[in-house]
Image (cartoon, rainbow, N blue to C red; front, side, top):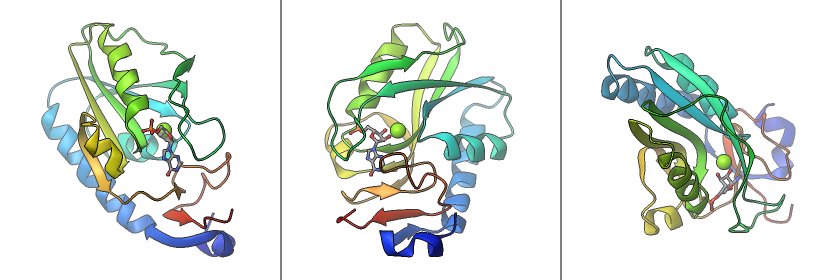
Length: 181
Ligand code: IMP
Ligand code: MG
């Protein structure tokens, strides 16, 4: 999907396809360096992490295992409900493994704090979090993201996997939705 196809729905583009690709490449290089010689289990949080997972994993040179987890946090609207439920659990056993969670955006960061506590209880060798975007509240809440693509303001963003009521995930850039949507 091109920006121009939904121009009237957008406030503005925050990061172009090229800017996102460049930053994802840098993150992949950093992760490769940090995990040299290790096999990483990448855990994507569905569905928002679909694009960052696809691009990050392909940009990495490391040997990886990819798995997915689905949790409920936002009930189809723009507000966090604060209640986390596992809708789809992992297929792989992460005990003793080096695990990197891959996420699209941290807003309050509370969903991922819960996910990290849950995964920690399964005794991985290491557990870290990578998020393409981070909003101010997650920083205030001391969210434990080791890798962050971009720190952004407190706006609702769409595109590059991120949705509003399941739409706009296939936009190639990251954009701010017009508030009257
Ligand atoms: P948090 O628990 O407040 O950090 O947010 C939970 C989840 O809500 C994130 O992982 C995203 O999937 C989703 N989310 C938060 N902010 C946005 C946004 O601006 N656009 C689309 N999804 C969002
Ligand atoms: Mg998400």
